[in-house]
Image (tube, rainbow, N blue to C red; front, side, top):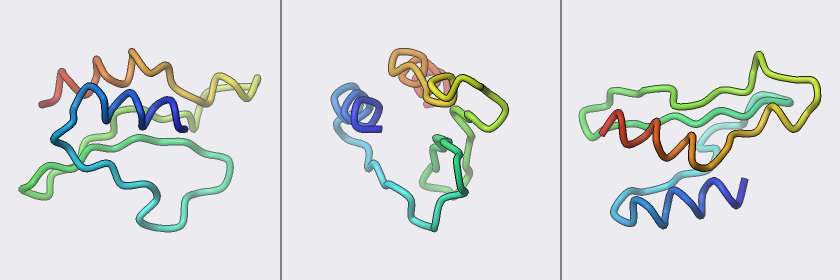
Length: 71
C-alpha cells in the first residue's frame, strides 16, 4: 500500500490521502476518490482479481492515470 499512497502523494501533492476511514473489508483492496461535493468514484478494485494474490494490488501508474482522468 505504501507504494500506491506515496505515488499518489507525489503526483498530486495538494490532495488529501486518507487510509481506511472505516474498517476495511477483509481481503480486499480498493481506491476511491471523493470530491469536495461529496461525489465518489471507485478508481481501482481488487475484489474480482486473483488468485494469485498479487493481482489484488494495483499498479501505481495505472492508479495515477485513472485519477488524472477523473480530476
